[in-house]
Length: 399
Image (cartoon, rainbow, N blue to C red; front, side, top):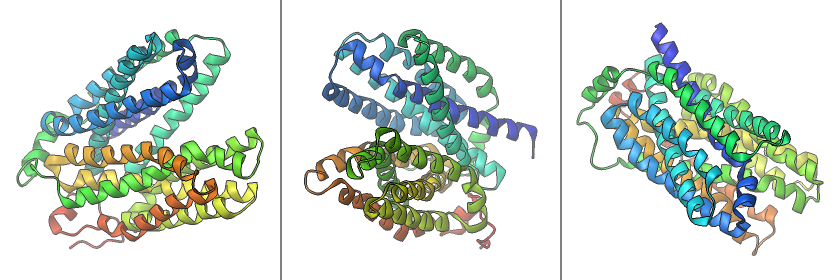
């Protein structure tokens, strides 16, 4: 294994960690920005939709650009834009400027997300074995680091503007050395030449199937992000400190699971990981929703995070390996719909609670997990050509 390939993998880790850290620092400072601009929770909720809209647009633009220019160009560009845009919410003084700031921040995040995932596919292909889940684990670790850093700076009384400005500068500084280690454009051009017909004008049906599964399971992730603590507090009447452990248990299990998923995929294949991971997630959330006690609920949310942990990275990987000449476009379709699912999760559960209790509303993501488990076969390699373009687990014989 060449030193340059190891360096490319390390650089990819850096960009995933940076992306998680940048967005985590924004999340930590949301209350401070809301207070400084004097907006209500309702207005903030509406403005956050602009963040999501910007991210979705950025993903759809960055995908074809990455196919055309190569990820060595688009990854640093996305990192620079996302880092610089982090300052904008800190200096926004009213609703209009904050809305523009969040849209630009979302756009930068979407561009970086697709570009770095496309490069991760290139690295995985060069390694010849699954490595995608570890990148997503490092993204989660970047968010954890942001939470710890934000807690420290806010505890020290640092104001939002200098803090986010400092983080933005650090992001720009990190981008320079990391970008030089990315796989060269020549490698990307070679991959485009190997594609039978270049970037297709029509997205393959299999990509839309992967995108639909990403939407379903990332909706489940969104539910955990916003409703896990509320479930313990409102349904089980747990103290606020105890209720917070639900999200902590879920996110810890999610990160830990992603750190080991690549080894499991190498032995068993992506179909096994998604099928039984989704089943485990469904069982865990069912136990949490219907168990009736705090310990059972915490165990259920832990199982939910562990089961989901390895699923979504398999969809990104499969999309990127579907067509070497159209990796960026295919990843953008899966990432875009998945991101919409993440946003839809909290929004869907809220209205459902007007019809049924919260614990019963949580059975909707349970159903989506079971659907994903049943449809996991879409990840199975079906043609000799595609088998040659994707790392094959030891359990999957060559054609």
